Image 1 (cartoon, rainbow, N blue to C red):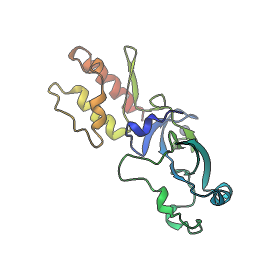
Image 2 (cartoon, rainbow, N blue to C red):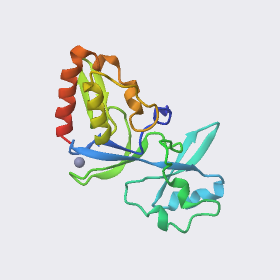
Image 3 (cartoon, protein in one colour):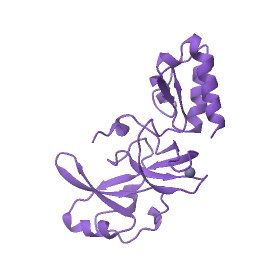
Image 4 (tube, rainbow, N blue to C red):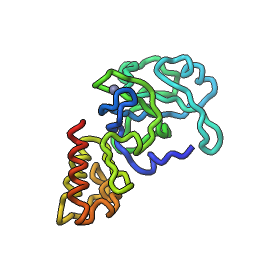
Length: 196
Ligand SMILES: [Zn+2]
């Protein structure tokens, strides 16, 4: 299983196409923590708030996954964890890094009410995506979509800061940015934005 998401930093929440109604839904990445002792496994297996998965990380290991966005017991009120674990272990980092959960997470859709676990397939799942001459251009969410539109439309493009929400603009291929394509790409992006 490849885990490109952690090498290519993404926000903890993304705008995705709802698998049920195709409207704009939110995907929340899950957080994982290593289960250190086999004796702790039964607790996590029995808990409705966690899922135990096996992953290969220098050998087979068990992780306890907590799904943000599923409406489970809040981390702030969880008080019966086995010794050595704290609910804060499953909090999102303030940076765009996560703890080995790969593409696992949950979808919540405000339009149709769907709420369930989902394995992210990016950028196929991206709500804010367009195809232009055979290639796909995407943004994480509404905010980054607006930045993307500005970036595409700019005739005098300033260098992008590597860190932060605009960093992904560095990866936008020139395919979408050359002067002769700019207007058509921007129009497609704006049309998609209106559908959110
Ligand atoms: Zn939906």
